[in-house]
Amino acid sequence: MAKATARHILVSSEAKCIELKTQIEQGADFAEVAKKNSSCPSSRQGGDLGEFGPGMMVPEFDKVVFSADVGSVQGPVQTQFGYHLLEVTSRTD
Image (spheres, one colour):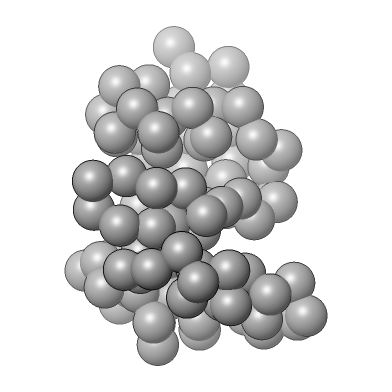
């Protein structure tokens, strides 16, 4: 069964999500940006969500996590919780 580890940043607006993605693309550390900006409790761990399998996260999340390149920052991804930046840190199929 497929498994992945990922980290994310959750914010309330698409504009903020795009702003943070730009910061990361310009060299800001993902974990530090998560600690300072994410509204998810995972922000304390730099956005780290740990390991999970398909179906354990919301469908919009799963679609990205199980298809995106490992190590690339994806988003904004909209869910019922807000707007996410996602980074897949590892995946096994």
